[in-house]
Image 1 (cartoon, each protein chain N blue to C red):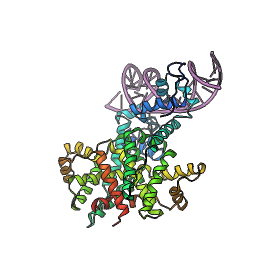
Image 2: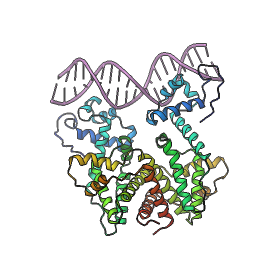
Image 3: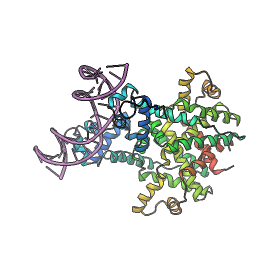
Image 4: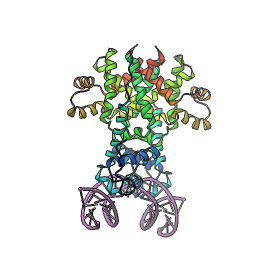
Length: 215
Length: 215
DNA sequence: ACCTGAACACCGTTCAAGT
DNA sequence: ACCTGAACACCGTTCAAGT
């Protein structure tokens, strides 16, 4: 994550640099989440004044984009899934993206707040488009499937670390009102143990197969 | 949205009330978005002091929950999709939810920021579970499919009003670097006209059919 | 009973000043 | 050249005081 070579003199860790700022921001964002990241906090973490940061990053937004760049670069160092079956390749690629992003939960809020993907995310899409085309989809169908895949990934990430919101709402409500919702009651009672990752795997498989083997 | 009966005396619009506060907040949130909603702004909109609001709402979070309650109540007044085919019923229900939420874009940020669904959202899930069960899914499969449906809806809403982020990133990048991404180049060139709603329709149909007719 | 002014503990960012 | 203190224009919320 960003070069952080010591020169070994000033203060604790050499001169201020974009790299040191990003490293500090990453530490904070991993600990406290994006919504609690502040320029003042980053400065304190480094042991400098808030204003010094502005010599190296334009503003808070560009700091977040920098963090996403570093993450995407790290991802694109992994080899992308290969294999003979294009459908499986799309699924595997989606899972790989999901796993990285899920392991860095701050990335979701970051993407949402800057409304931008770093260019280093492009190889993944390229890989997906190639597989979709190999599976026989035309331009329009490929765009639809690719877009659906990403939206599913983001939706999952966005709500994956909450419990299932519906069941939470049901349980809170169910306590008071009788059980006007018989289906929900049944499901809540049996409460199948489904991890967010299981749910993602099932969903993305269904999605991809739905696109590649239409009814 | 929310009772707002005039008593017709004090100031412009009668005494302060939870209803008037919610109505003002809704106006602001529709105009400026959730991230720009401030207690101070709501007070100004009504023509009172920021502190007066705290007599009627506990805090900013509960104000957002109130807005979501009003919206869900409005939704649950619509009849839910009927029809003989359970798969189609799930699709239609998802589309109905999508259309309402897409027509109130602030709702997405609101749900994300409070991390909670209002109880009035439950009938929709009940309806979906009933259809999934009628289609023959067991508890676990129904939970997976239901959860996938919602995550897809939220993912779509979250990124639907951005253009496709991948193509945006490609175009920005493509300008500089040659075309190392041949598939993306092809797709960007043909640029099929796909509206967010088209993408959603195709995706949710693929998803539901993928779950109900597994390979 | 209902409302509010002043204040507290925060933000991101600008700008003029320091070394 | 590089850093920073003071300041500006904001936040949500508390608390003691007003009517």
